[in-house]
Amino acid sequence: MAQPGPDIAKLPFEAALAELETIVDKLEKGAVALEDSIALYERGEALKAHCDRLLANAQMRIEKIALNAEGKPKGVAPLDGE
Image (cartoon, rainbow, N blue to C red):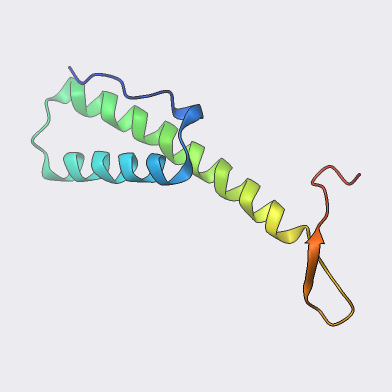
């Protein structure tokens, strides 16, 4: 049976995406036992959800960039509206 990887919540986006790509590759090749495939699929789902959350947070930060009168970035506004 496959060993669980590092705690997903602590992974940066790039590491989570790389692990997700590795899982997809293994599953597509079909050379993994059924139980391992299920475990990999479940971890892949969790990694995808984590990546989605990180991307949503990044998008919110980008949308909060404040522009000056010329339309150029002058800083960022806090996410909580303070």
